[in-house]
Image (cartoon, rainbow, N blue to C red; front, side, top):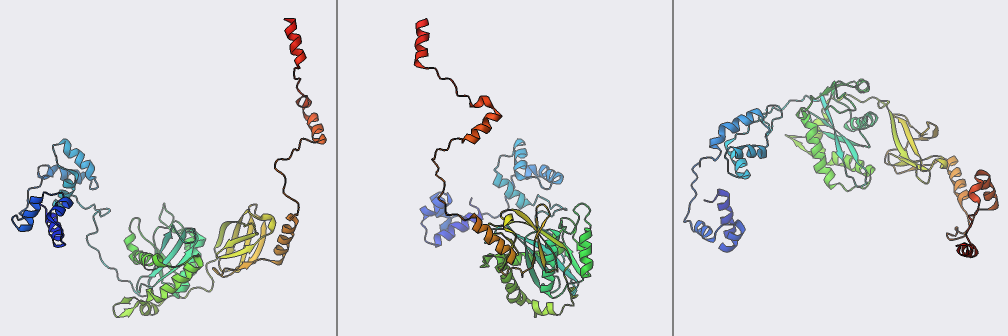
Length: 427
């Protein structure tokens, strides 16, 4: 007896012009069986056949009552010790057909049963989440803070080098200014930069951040990402619609491309009779404060051989004596100054912060002159040292060595041939 899937495949292959022998080889069936089914000499009996699991049904139901996530491989091993002789595919097919595996009430394994769409009032809620990009064209991981208005669905996103609190504050301010304001409430998951993982309460700096923008923060319960389904869908939309086909080579190009996509593609989506842009423009958002939240941003960098350090798509100079050293870049959000501090905590340089992604170089006249002097001092016209030259210790080196260990410089006495002859005659 062939299954319904086997019959469908045999008929489909026959209509494509396959021979009976080719169909038999492909399906692993006998040629006479294939020919009989094609001629209509056999028919399926679709009456429900008794399940091979029927004798073990009560045991299987009890095992799933004990553990709804019991693996079928473990269940098969237990059933075989009780006399079940069928294969693993048969077991899984019968479990699905008989619907023996229950739905876990906690994690809802097997899909969620019912749901309800929440009504979001205009200007009431902004949902935030991170999109993590492990592979980028510029070779460094990237983090994208995605913000989505729950009512209109307008999406804005900002690239960031990390997910620390200062980096989150900087990216969040960029999202709000791209949206033209902020909703009255932010809905987030239990991200470590805002929420204490143990208690689930806002961190002190996160509370100050919310007070700075005049909003409240709603934290989703643990393992309940559906509470912020708007931004979850927005993250998938950004990844599939923009990132997979974005032609970018640097983080600055990616940010510019993302901003264009958000306006030209995302805002033109239809929501009933309106577009996302029309709905978002009608939302009563709170205006952002004149300055971002004054968080201190600190990042570690290594100075290049040309005494430059990279930050936000630009390069800033330091004294040439600190080339190839690790330094810390310190800046306060909203302020135009960027400070470069050594590992010992010494201020090395202060620069005016350039626009992010501008691709410019800020080198002071003092640093340029010092770098020129260092390069000229290291320049020489002497030929390179010979690798195979003989250079024994000098007289001064031997004098110093004899003062340290006189016995180390005594030449060992090598026996002569005459001494060997004398020893031989004595015997």
